[in-house]
Amino acid sequence: MAAPERKPVRVTIFHQNYTILASGDEAEVHEIAREMDELMMSIARRAGNVETARLAVLAGLHMADELRRARRELDALRARIEAKSAELSGRLGRALDGQD
Image (tube, rainbow, N blue to C red):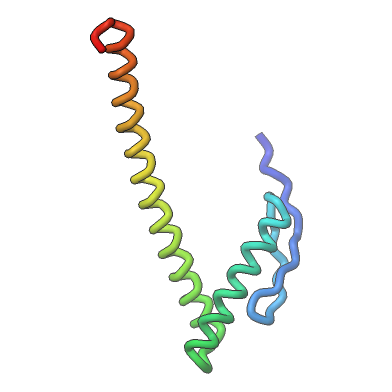
């Protein structure tokens, strides 16, 4: 199977232009870049005169923390769904057997 075609997408993050090769939706790439730009601008306003690389690392750490939190929430939701599914499956089985 061939790799998806990648096309160049131009974005601006923290006053710097980048061309990113993306195989997905161009609008999504722009949205992610906009979020990163806003995050770096926010950090720069609070941190003062900090070099761009440091801002990028802090922004990356912030996004990684958000991703980790979202994964934990997703795992908890999956566990609740599995438990509820098992409970409902048991109830259905008992109802079909005439025990409920």
